[in-house]
Amino acid sequence: MSSHREAPEIAKDPVADSSDLYAFVSPDKPDSVTLIANYVPLQLPSGGPNFFEFGDDVRYEIHIDNDGDGRPDVTYRFEFTTEITNPNSFLYNTGPIDSLDSRNWNRRQFYSLTRVADGREHRLAHKLPCPPCNVGPLSTPRYAELVRQATYSLSTGERVFAGQRADGFFVDLGAIFDLGTLRPFQQLHVAGKKVFKAEGEPVNATDRMNVHSIAVQVPLNRVRRGAKRYGTGDAASVIGVWTSASRRQVRVLGDRGAADTTSGPFTQVSRLGNPLFNEVVVPMSKKDLWNSLPPSEDKRFAQFVEHPELAALLPALYPDVFPNLDKLTKAGKARADLVAILLTGVPAGLIDGFTNATGDVQADMLRLNTAIAPSRQPDRFGVLGGDLAGFPNGRRVADDVVSIALRAIAGLTVPLVDKTFHPDAAAAAVTPGLSAADVTAPFLANFPYLGTPYDGFNNPPASS
Image 1 (tube, rainbow, N blue to C red):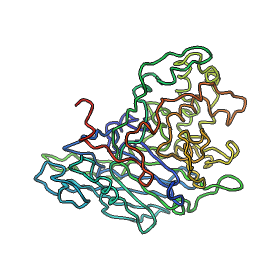
Image 2: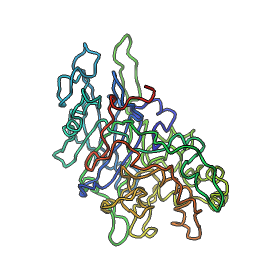
Image 3: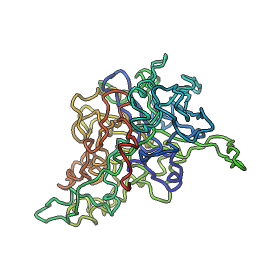
Image 4: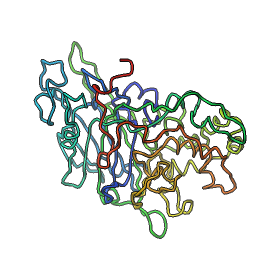
């Protein structure tokens, strides 16, 4: 999955687990950029009596680098507090929740939003209410209205939302982690030879699950300020984006029902830039370390991008299907194409009319060329599909990042840096066989873009 439970330690701490990150020029408001970070992954809709929420003891942040050094120039910080209305009730709500100040809602969550830039902190908002979880048709009968109430336009130009949404990531998890099985791909005939066929159709493992999202829509002049200009001629403004979660260094467990206490400075426990980076590039022994470091330290992990383990596994798992990739991998040649895509951005001249390069510093960030307008007809394969407004130029909610990443690793992007290399025919066909159409909750046309979360009444767990 993009970053769901991707490292041993963060798998034990779901409220601080960053699962997906999106950054794109807003299609309905192209003078702004939308940044969305998802946390608390793999939520079953029927979560009562204790429903999912953000951590009051976690600092959630979305960072923007606009000078190419892999360090934040602008940070949007979300910090949460929880209040109980009726301490004598075990229920999340005692009647329908029809507004954010409903007396029927027993456990409410609020947040403050701080913008950090130029070494200064500016509190943009204090005690903004989150919407409740989507409990069911009786408890939250007009959920879309609650979301509208919980979407705020600030005097500084930002729009902001924090709360539960449907998980928009799509992946055939059971197949991919069963030794790289790709169900639709295995039904192909390559060079006249029938590839091993797996039984069954692809299944979206994250469908009908929820996440908690922090989302901010920012005017372009609030992210470009002080940015370097990259490219030639019609130069583009490029930003790097990542999200992180941090906890206090010390936690003391309360005795006999007393609340826990925390102290000390905040330390980072989770981060996410490009989808799947820590998931399938960083080795198991270094995943927790990676989560603790800033992107500016990612040169430590460049060797795993230059020589990805999966590129060597594909020819072994699919004999005679990837002969050119096999030769490239065995030659030990560093994958400069993947370094460009994941660590430095794509320099001008490799793709007509496109660059999202940020310089020589190797850092895992979503790089977004904010001068490229949203596409009127988005292609799910992004830049690989000729749509320069899609991944790896930022990431939109419907981009098929798993297929794009697999095709890049399979060698489809090598000709960008080596014109003598000819990708295997199968490289352009690698896919888990899923798309945004396999997400039951449809994406929205407007902020916050991710679909309405699934409620427990209409989406009971399969075991029931």
